[in-house]
Image 1 (cartoon, one colour):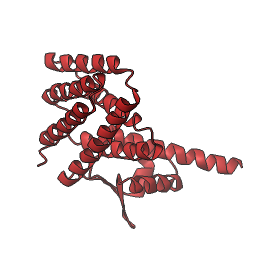
Image 2: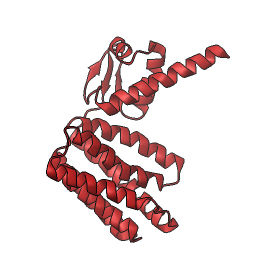
Image 3: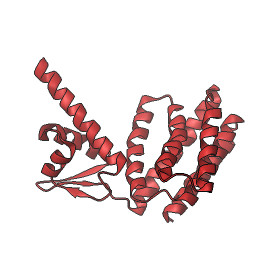
Image 4: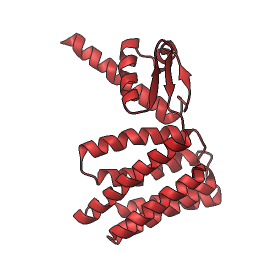
Length: 218
């Protein structure tokens, strides 16, 4: 029993270490690593790493290259479009369900955080503004995904969120984009507050299109 428990703990540790490395940008888009390099980087046994890599491959985060190692997902234009389109569709549905169920508590805090980040970006802010902006940006997307109320949908959303994190880490969150992204989010939040599902869906679509434009994806 103890041996099984220890194996499970090592597997969880390897999975967490891999997810953290991908979210933080320690593992970069398109990067190739041998299994031995990955073991050293994540500081976990190779068996646990192999299991974590299998999960990463299933989520589309990694590609396994037999007898060579693994490659992190590449931020190609078609990948960016598909990941953002996937998020848009589930964000729209999450907004619709929240409004239909009257589950729109917490909007005042979201609005305040987004307005503060927009204003900080306009005035220059601190050196760590991009990382803080990503946290604020994700807070609305998390809010919408939680409105789905379906473990299968939220699981798929979580996997896609990891893919988007890899994409985001490939390019700095520039100050001008922080301002416009926060403003786009504030329009979504306002539509949620007014219980206007059509306006919320449209605002989410506009945010999707503006994000694609910022990435230079046609």
